[in-house]
Length: 191
Image (cartoon, rainbow, N blue to C red; front, side, top):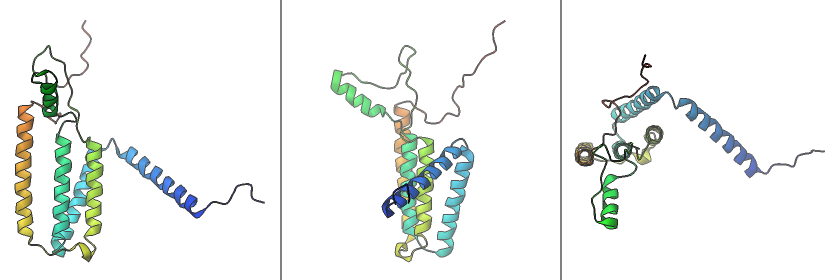
């Protein structure tokens, strides 16, 4: 006689799904420190997708949707988690004074925390490119459109949103990148 009870089909599928999710998460955890390699892989996959669209002469609407989604992710990557413009509105409503990022030495230092961290940005971008690549193999998603209009509209959208984002960065004095900033390290002990 069996000592363990029989598994239902649902329990077996659930166990396999859970096992696959753990393996996928372990793979993601192992890839975390390799930022450059992750982005190079995503860029190569994105290039492969664009080659597919170019040579197949179709699926422009899928490429456009991917471009809009990647632009949305990039903007979330550039924005601070705690938006100073929202803080200013909150402060004005509470006490009537204008708030902002610290500009003097006696004010509190608040580090730049992204609304969308780099790893999540990479993961969502890679997932989106994968979905777009899969969609490019189905005729259902090959909607006939005049692609130059989509390209021009995307360029205009990119320029306008980036201009607005740069103005926001200048107004509230934050830089979302770490290069060009002062780096503080250990100094040699004073003798």
